[in-house]
Amino acid sequence: MARITAGLTSSHVPAIAAAWDQGRADEDYWRPVFAGFDWTKKWLAEHMPDAIVLVYNDHASAFSLELIPTFAIGCADRFEIADEGYGPRPVPAVEGHADLAWHIAQSTILDEFDMTIINKLDVDHGLTVPLTLMFGQPEAWPTKIIPLAVNVVQFPPPTGNRCYMLGQAIRRAIESFPEDLDVQVWGTGGMSHQLQGPRAGLINKEFDTAFLDRLTADPEALRKLPHIDYVREAGSEAIELVMWLVMRGALGEHVRELYRFYHVPTSNTALGHIVLEPTN
Ligand code: DHB
Ligand code: FE
Image 1 (cartoon, helix red, strand yellow):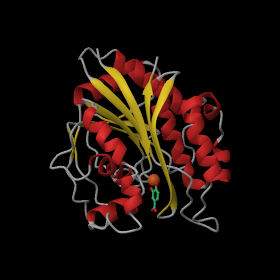
Image 2 (tube, rainbow, N blue to C red):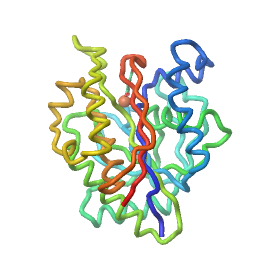
Image 3 (cartoon, rainbow, N blue to C red):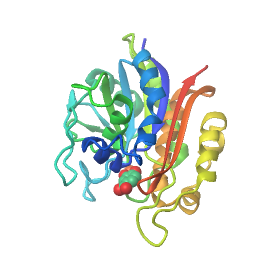
């Protein structure tokens, strides 16, 4: 049977992609950002999963205001890199795991989650920036990726509690897949950030630190956090953090925190990253 071996989360700031793609990763501003992922790069090399369910949000690249699925899963064998206005990033296309993705779609839908099935999907910085941070610049990404898109762009996004429950359903799905696979679940986006309006540039380190602490030790408290608290405390785009709760729900009740990195500022945002291992 397949199993969930670890979960991790990371911000997906597009300026990170620009810095990397333009060869500026060694500049004083960017060096500490990329260095914050050195531990995880080494750890991943020794704990490479067979597949990653990568929870991210599309930023009007594959979807638009004409079509806004709340939860959607990429069931294709391959996902091209989206053109976000400057041409697609010079990174490898993403190889999917169609059998496992279809199994997760079937299992979660029969588990009463109204999952949208996507057979053609171009993936944007929400998905590719974490890949760059964790894997650098390989010829091909070292494992298969199942994109799982969550709407956090157009109100109303799903609640943190619903995202957590989806994570639990994803775990049930993975644990009922008959192949012997190691699977990780990744969450992306966050942490505190607001990109527009008078509060643009808002960063709240206390909120972010408490969120990271509770993600490990008290996810029950985070399940109850209403949308308005994310927006008020940590900025309008901090709502992306509900995607981290999909990862957390998938890991089960008890986890061990293996690594954490928090860095301010990264472009307009607070960058957060955590690696968790299930212990139950
Ligand atoms: C920016 C965009 C994002 O999607 C994000 O999560 C953080 C920052 C930006 O445009 O700077
Ligand atoms: Fe984003």
